[in-house]
Image 1 (tube, rainbow, N blue to C red):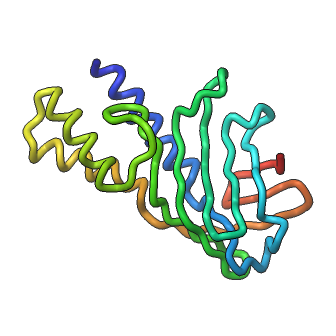
Image 2: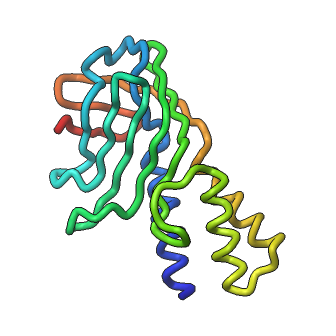
Amino acid sequence: MNKSILKVVGVVAVAAALCVGCGGDNGVSGGGNALYGTWCGDENCALSITYKRNGTYEYRLVDSDGVLISGSKGTYSTNGTTITMQSTEVYNPIGYGGWHNKNQFINAYIELYMSMGHTQENARIFAEDLAKVFGSSTQNYSVDGNTLTRGDSKLTKK
């Protein structure tokens, strides 16, 4: 069971790292309407982010069978060539499974860590540390044709 937990924690960490600066577009200059739509991080689009006109985004990481293994949803805004993202939900494949807001996410991890023998206080500390994926991030971005550059990441329009 500990290996499974480490895998899930790793997936959450990777998702958070990949999604830093994910965002969408409400009032974009620097990307304009070109930002809207789905962008892929690889040729199979296993890693994708969709920016919607209403200022929301959805990030997804799927396995080779197309099954969702990690993701986040939230709001975004742009200002010039800067994009800011705020996660409001993350996909958590363990515990209760499915999409969770921050409180649900923390409670699922507290329950999980306590089931592994951790004290409630230690479980809370671990869970709150993982919940940093709900933080806000700001990053430079640009759109050039079918290429979205966000920080050091390049994505291709689907």
